[in-house]
Amino acid sequence: MLAREYAPKASVERSPVIVSHTMLMGLKEGQQKMSKSDPDSAIFMEDSADEVLRKMKKAFCPPKIIEDNPVINYTQFIVFPSLEGKPFLI
Amino acid sequence: MKAINVNKIAKAGGIFIFWVADWFGQLNNKMGGDLDKIQTVGRYFVEVWKAAGMNLSNVKFLWASEEINKHSNEYWQLVMDISRNNTVTRIAKCS
Image (cartoon, rainbow over the protein chains, first blue to last red):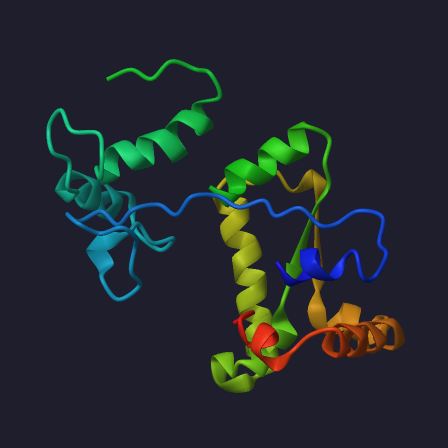
């Protein structure tokens, strides 16, 4: 933000663009974001495949509700883009 | 998601430059202010992005400590100019 404010003063040709992405939800009910201190709120890089499966199975996922649903959230922002057009089979 | 977005930018022909802020980690006393440890963590981050499927062929990693020292004259003059054009209140909002 500061860089974008400063750019005109510095007469730089192009002001930097901010490329940001949404924050993923925490896996438990009511968690708008993940938390380092809560292991079950997120998937950590060091988690084994079993751990990942366990955490996802435990994740808050109310049936037929899309809003504030971390499983839908992860599907939308991680699974679908990673599939790159390949079909998502349930 | 970072890996996904970097791959999208790379696919569109962009070059992604990662600014590894090791010096700033030290400034914030991360890892007890030990620059070596901080740089080890920085290298760990690179491995994490690789593991997350980031395509590194159009990605460059620049280390703050190296770059600032390589271009110290330019860098510090820029810091001075930015400081003179701002207030403490505004700069404090950067944290």
